[in-house]
Each structure stands twice: as C-alpha cells, then as structure tokens.
Length: 100
Image (cartoon, rainbow, N blue to C red; front, side, top):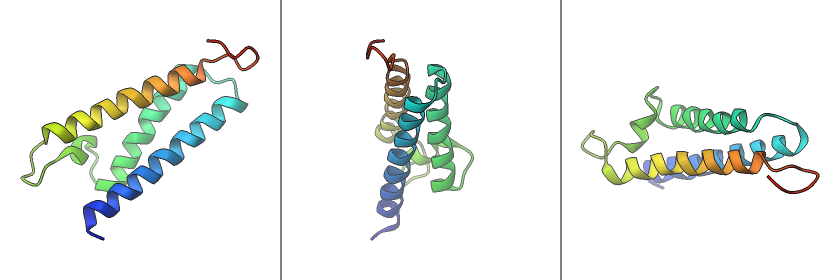
C-alpha cells in the first residue's frame, strides 16, 4: 500500500478511536461539554503530529508541491468543525432525560 494511503487509514482509525473514547467518557463522567469538545480538537492535533511528524497541524493539508491544497485544507477545517460540534452537542445531552 502506498505511504499516503497507509497514513490515511491510520489517521481514520485514530480519529474514530479518539471519538469513541470521548463518547464513552461523556457517558460516565459529568465533564463540562466544552472541555470535551476542545479535547477532541486536541486529539486531532496530536493525531496530525503523529502522522506527519510536524508540529504544524496544517501539514496534513499540504499538496504534492509543498503548498496548502485548497481541497485538503477545507476537508481538514470542516472535519475539525464537525467533530467539535458533534462532541459538544453529544456531551451536553442530559443523561437522565435525554434532552439538551
């Protein structure tokens, strides 16, 4: 398997694993919702650090020419927005009533 595809698979596995961890933690502990949402963003940062070896999280969005790729950058930013919103909303559900 080519190197970029292998990293993409591991990135997806690590992202899903971190989301499952944050979801389970939200069930058992009464953490503040924003804390969990920012923790999810921190998980995305650490995953990008492990995958690229660079402290710059936007290094994932670099194209073949070494510059930021517009489509990869948009995918990266929207993934962060959606993960943040999902974790924030899911962790703010009242566990006894099932309401926000």
